Image 1 (tube, one colour):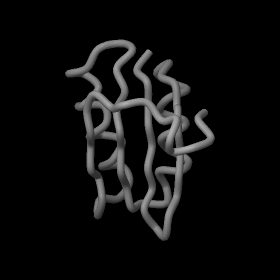
Image 2 (cartoon, one colour; image 1 turned 135 degrees about the vertical axis):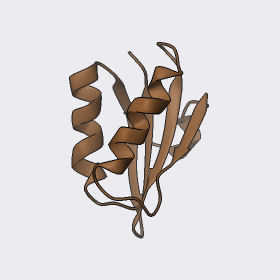
Image 3 (cartoon, rainbow, N blue to C red; image 1 turned 90 degrees about the horizontal axis):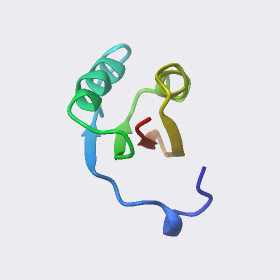
Image 4 (spheres, rainbow, N blue to C red; image 1 turned 135 degrees about the horizontal axis):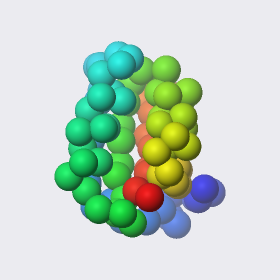
Length: 83
């Protein structure tokens, strides 16, 4: 994982799931990654605290790399490199 926002890679696609609750953010992520290729980076923003558990499991289960995970005042940011 990257330690600083300055070292974060550019994203190839973005998904805003703010306002949605489990299981919707993960369902939308499944749909989004279908349109992407291995090695591309997906930026996900969310407001559901359950994503702190669900997104790492999503990555682990599907072979994606969680590059960055950040929480700031109820807003969650994830960068995922597709496997």
